Length: 163
Image 1 (spheres, helix red, strand yellow):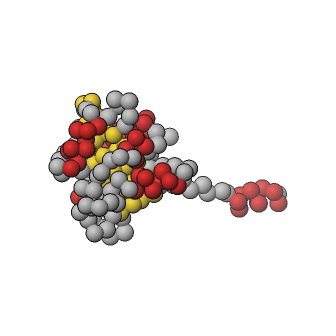
Image 2 (spheres, helix red, strand yellow):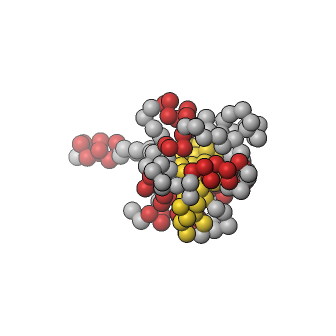
Image 3 (cartoon, one colour):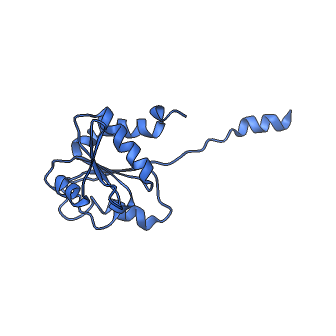
């Protein structure tokens, strides 16, 4: 499948720029997007920076892989700088690996998208805990959990078995 037509990307883009079920654009609230995989987080941050060039996007990852991305250009920065930019409302969109799920206070952001779901439910709670904490500026925090839906073609299989 062509990555430019990725359905998960399209859904993330729509949530950020249009909202969900009557909510405002999640970009207006500030958003962190989690992925358990660095390659997915990097690709998503870079693609979003190309499609929403007016926004800086923080990539929060481990092992000196954190960056600030705007209009497709990647600038490596320290994770502490991303924290400071969010705190000062200079950064409204962060894409993070699970390195961002502990010890990070992001109550300036009002929404969270889980691009993938960890097997351990405690990790999911840790991710949510980055924005749902004392000092949160929004009365309601939005969380969207993406999951893969597998559709089986049972009817076709049954018809095949009958023939």
